[in-house]
Length: 72
Image (cartoon, rainbow, N blue to C red; front, top):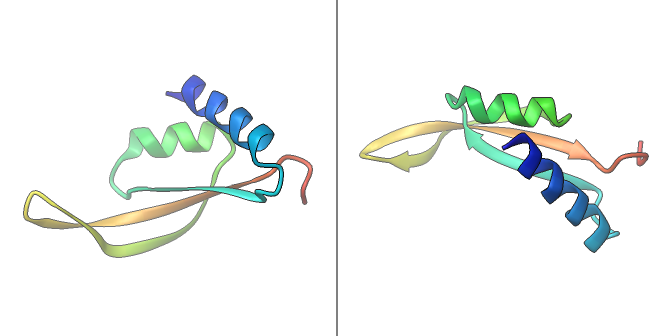
């Protein structure tokens, strides 16, 4: 997944030169997805309580953001 995310990022930056940030919302309890994002340089920027409804239960979301390289 880390390699797939890297390819997605490269394509997004190349294809959409005006994009400043990439964002990802994930289930807050999904540690594997959080680790992939962290390894690719995404930062945890917020959380949303009871954001998703799945299998009859509410789940929190975590928001990760990565700025375009060299844009800071």
